Image (cartoon, rainbow, N blue to C red; front, side, top):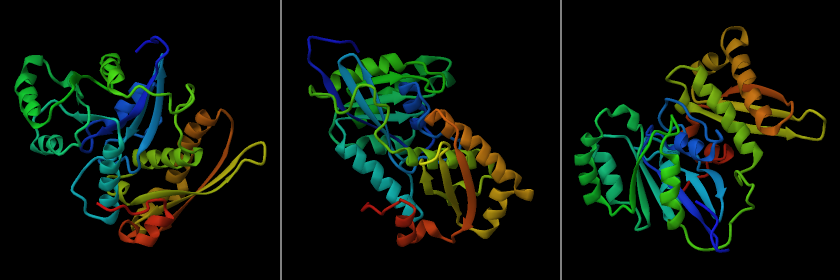
Length: 299
């Protein structure tokens, strides 16, 4: 993308796909900044994460969406509705898939809104002979009229320039939506909570991640060292012990790692206090979902 004859392009690019295909990793690779949390656990992304990339006369507002999945809770239905809403409101779509033919991916491709769409085949480093992709390309070509198909490896940041070259001409000619130096329009509190949740996903056992929510209860910047207080909600009493750990060591490790991420983002020291509450079945309670920032959406 390069500067043209005074005309600018700008638009929202929704990154959609099923869980664990690398959507958040792709967003981070495109921006060159790790604003979206990542983990091996499915459904890590719960809210749309927006990142702004301005290069020359083109501004792309990327929206990383929750992975579309078979929902088993009110939270899951809310995540699916969020992803579909973002797709409908976008100017351009990026469908991310792994380098294999999966009927669920084909079904998703067939139901995408009629918008300019780029198919991104991620994790291409797993394929030794690229000719093996030809049957896959034929199947996806029948499912949806893609504007372009881009193989890439988001984890290795390969193929990003090619993807940007395809996306730039697809967004509308219009003024920039944000100042050119904007990275995201989302509040600091959002990223603080996400960075804490990322460390919980990284440190705890397989059964904890789906039942954890992080709420910033205090964010006081009036003193030289900002004071941030965070409540970690878990869906079971037994999970509380896992997150806290023996003699509080697990919670301390989570806090230390999360504080480092927050301080890197803010560029200054912070005081971060965490505590854990057992809030049974919060994922299916509409009032608790609202309290934790997950207001329900219609599917």
